[in-house]
Length: 109
Image (cartoon, rainbow, N blue to C red):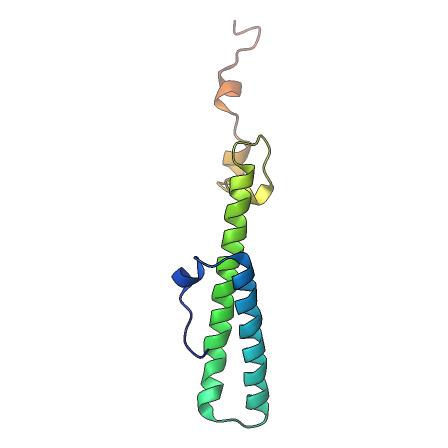
């Protein structure tokens, strides 16, 4: 592999293709680590960093695609998992809704 993988090229791939590429990269990393122990050439040692970053890119694209699929699945639903809800701040999340804030008590009526 040896060349840097571009994230925009990974976004077009399916889940199975991403997992296969991840497996290939991990195998290549293992081989490079063996070469490092056995005193391989410096050109191989410099590839370890490139492969590690490529693994991170594949995992990032994979996780983002999984999260987007979940967002589509939960779109329009009443309850969503906590990690799909808007983050905002703690105070904003606890703030009264406009409907709650506009309600009047018996005394105010």
